[in-house]
Length: 263
Image (cartoon, rainbow, N blue to C red; front, side, top):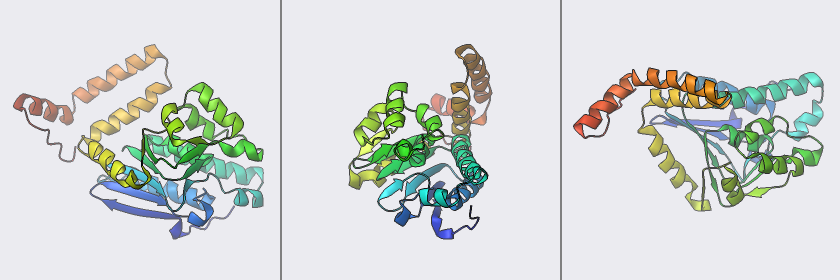
């Protein structure tokens, strides 16, 4: 598969700790070519190492959030090695989103299908417009959404997830909300306002505590209950010994808002 990185595939902006990544292949409905995935992989690695980053917002430019993998590219480079490289890189990106030490918000306006639906599910939070639609549509092209299934099935209950995977049919924004795939549905013109409100609710929390909590959340999901409680007990003990809790206790005693600074 091609190795070239077109700088127009991903728009990057940062302001006051909020990093905005915008998929920028509107003519291809922001489909995830290998070059796009490589850029995402690189940018997520940089964000993970960026001490000033507090929140990541992921968007798509144009009429779609993301239409999944680039089927044209897949057809032209259809060897096991090429496909393993493509799907492997995609899986790495999804894991990066989960492991990123800052909250990730998907701001969805338009369709999110197959690996695009996976991308939404891999984000910590998701806000979508009323016109947005979601599908695990690969089965309609003879390709079961096996890798999108991983993130989807960790967000959506089993029966709705299986219905999406087996039929490939779209679900509208309200059903996506009912399924737990998104946190909030807003009018089409109100997406940026809603995203800004969510960002504001996150950036006034201590960064280190959010990073610790996010990491613990995803780790305990893969454990049995007894192991999860043992693990979480150690996490909360470690958290209670951090500077963040010192400041939180001081603010509680002094009846004021915490001043987290860069913690």
